[in-house]
Length: 349
Ligand SMILES: [Zn+2]
Image 1 (spheres, rainbow, N blue to C red):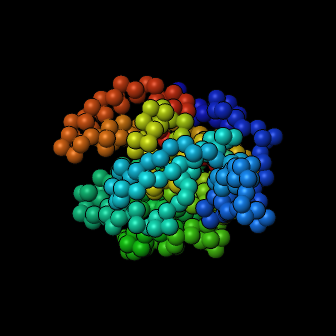
Image 2: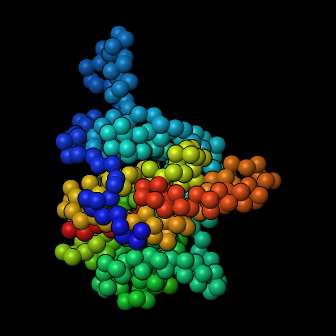
Image 3: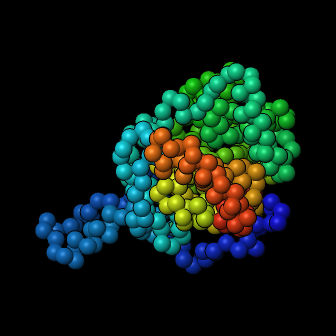
């Protein structure tokens, strides 16, 4: 199977028909996706039926299709262990979107100072940048030159490669140290903000917009896709790489799955939803890949790190080795459509 056999209309994905689409709920809270809060006409002492109604109305609503979301699982921060708090994920029964609700008010706390490695020693930097080469190769299959915007570039390895390949690069990033770093090293314009959707509204037009594992971190992924569509030049392309909630790893590991990354990953978005949501904003052509180099690396990392994180600290290394062996055994299964731990969607008009 080639990397691009998963194509719009023939990808074997569970499709969600337009007839099932519901309008956004009128209780929808755009800041959290939740629809909590009793209606104004709630009796002071509701009977059992009213109480059930209120409980139903307090469930979060899906940002994609508006349906009520049901509790799916709770998880702790296994990757960074910032706190011992428990986080609740809900799943939309209609379209399969999984969202964290409520989103912690102190979300910034879960991105510690060392979240992004800005090591400047040339060797480490070269190694880190080389590991992102596959992203540029993917972009070059769809665009050869022009203005490129990355949402969430971190240390800017991919931006550096894109810049070297002749793209005019810019970035939207919430981490101030990363913004300074990118401005200094690449002399690239950065929009340093926690509101990337508004930043895109003000920005110029781009031939390429990339979201390498950043969409799942955003409070409003649907608005982000809309804003990206609006910020494209006529022949432009949006690339979205994100964890895959239909992954084999998630089915097996559930709350222990390292790519759940509670509470930093706010949404796990099925590939069909990215495709449908982007189409609402004119990005009707979607190519999906579940076999690109990034995904293959995330497959291996997923098993190794999930098993390692589940071990007592003194046994982390041997458990990580066992996780790596499990990953090698399951490699053929994960390379089958929709089973991979992540995917990349390439979206065009
Ligand atoms: Zn939904």
